[in-house]
Image (cartoon, rainbow, N blue to C red; front, side, top):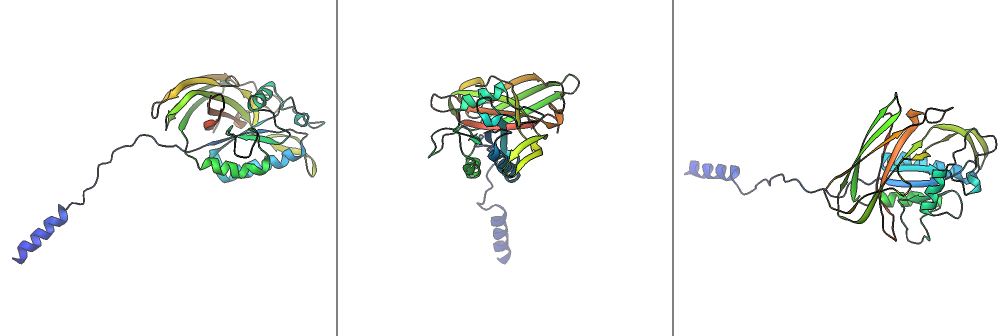
Length: 275
């Protein structure tokens, strides 16, 4: 009899009701969030030096999840290079970018994910609010993932960029895709609160916009889990006196809403020309 009870107990152990559920893949959910900062700066702008330091500190904290573009425009006096500087980072594309977002009251200024935050009158934000806003945005799940595949031909300096957009939620309305190119590790003058620094390292400087400044419409009413692909090509200008150095170039891509009252960034991504 004891043997029978032992056998029943053993069978109960192996064939009990603790079933292991099957591994059923789930549809895509909110992806890793990348936050875009479009900063407006200038070589003759004293507080812009502190703003650059703030962004580098945020990059040290958040790493690749933070995507930074720094533009020098034509419409604000402080964006002019300091007297005697080697380079002039002001471009018509930078001017078009700030006009697309909206002119700030002064420099430095930045738009974070092109979102209108509570208590703000426009998309431009003072530097004392950048850190907390970046952290808050990074905590929100992304509504899409952006996968970038970049090939750079060093002989003819042509970029081939393939982008796959995978919505992790339904996205209503028109959606635009923008691509641009930035350059870092440029050494030149910068005025600071402590005076002129002749060997300041300028990073994330807007060099060109690959798409139209307002972007390319890639679709309307995107459905969760249905991928969309886009491809672009771009010929990088020849290296010129320390500019357009391939090792220092990065392509930035971002997806935005296209509503009458919102052009908020849905997701951003970036990739270096040469890893």
